[in-house]
Length: 125
Image 1 (cartoon, one colour):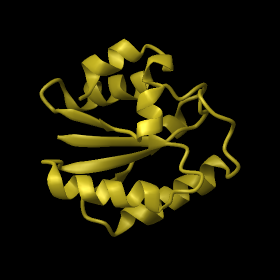
Image 2 (cartoon, rainbow, N blue to C red; image 1 turned 90 degrees about the vertical axis):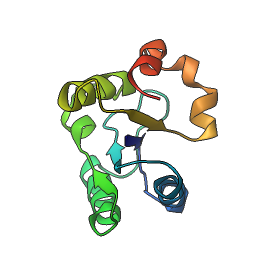
Image 3 (cartoon, rainbow, N blue to C red; image 1 turned 60 degrees about the vertical axis):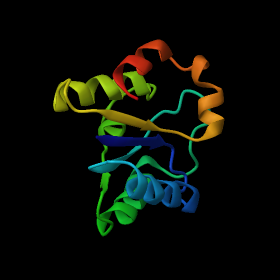
């Protein structure tokens, strides 16, 4: 199973890292992919540039077993919709690989406001 942790990471902080470490310990995750968004559709634009946020994510994931940096949303123009990211991952990894979408309670509470949110539930756990 692959964990997917998206966000602006503006900046990446302990509130991202600690839960990810805890999840690696208690769930059968092969890895957690930190995926910084390019254009957040549900919040103001990040203060840090995409390049700076990407470098922060690379630094956090570089020496931590089970963490991986994924720049697919930064390479995609337009709003960073999770449904698009999950579809990309499905194409890359196949239908057999389980995807576990990791999000905070605040994001979960607003999930029904996300673009094509019903499809997200079909693409990831």
